Amino acid sequence: MAEEGAASLSLPGPLLITGAGGFVGRHVLAALARLSPGTRVLTPATDITDRDAVRALFAAERPAACLHLAAIAAIGVARGDPALAWSVNLHGTLAIAEAIRDLAPACRLIFVSSSDLYGASFRCGEALDEQALPAPLNTYAATKAAADLALGAMAAEGLSVLRLRPFNHTGPGQSEHFVVPAFARQIALAEAGRGPAIIRVGALAPERDFLDVRDVARAYLAAVAQAESLASGTVLNIASGVPRRIGDVLSALLARAAVPIQVEEDVARLRPADIPRAVGDARQARECLGWAPAIPWDVTLGDVLDDWRLRVRGDVLF
Image (cartoon, rainbow, N blue to C red; front, side, top):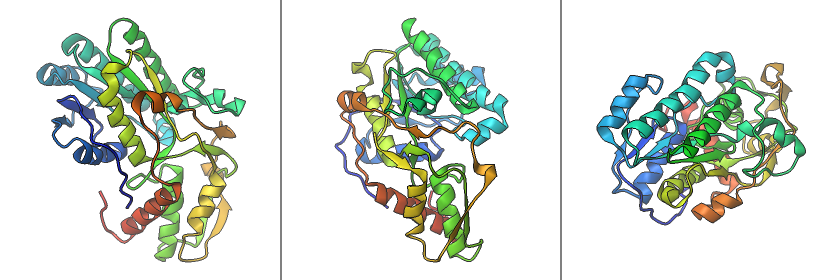
């Protein structure tokens, strides 16, 4: 697995992290242990859709900062259960924001939004900065856009909040609901003789802006460290600025496979509202946070595939 280098960070504490047990959360905790081991970290298991429980948590703990990661993050899951997606992604976020406003006003909220909210704005084909209009094209994106815009309004009314809009990110530990691990899982199963030597894919022509989750984790912690120096309501894209064709991602993974594997299109994996290219402009994050991606893409792909080889063999990586 890759080890990315970075300077230590001085973070406010206590730092409350929602969704710390999720894919990104585990990488954030690993980065915290390395970059700011003295920070007091709170990782409650509170259901963020339980407004009373959320208010009790913030009244008791009064954290200095809250990194809000908890979400229904897979587009397919949100599409299949929109009520749950709206409950968690919008109403859960509002419950946290209102608890901070009312009970812990000194707490800075760092909200992890999503680049998916730009949606149809990507059809211009250019790298989008933070001024691009939200135009969501799926349920997940709509829930994130609603929460993002609501927090922007609350910032104007006094809430201390920083909004981050990460682009696609992947790495060890990600579920097969996302494209890179979906490819890697099928390859690992084929290598182990536990699946056909066929990989079933959706559209391969679209281009996406991919990041390594460990670089994203560093960006989030840099945002926590710098939050007080940024105006409330600030929006920052977290992006590589490099468009990568999905078919090229697949080809790079297949080149690492230990057995020959055929490719077949699976109509069930085709998205109804796909866009040709989605790429971000993250110059503001570089300027405000001193952050830039550091992990080579080839390393990321190798780590994702090795992760799935371990899982297929029955080992537990996380």
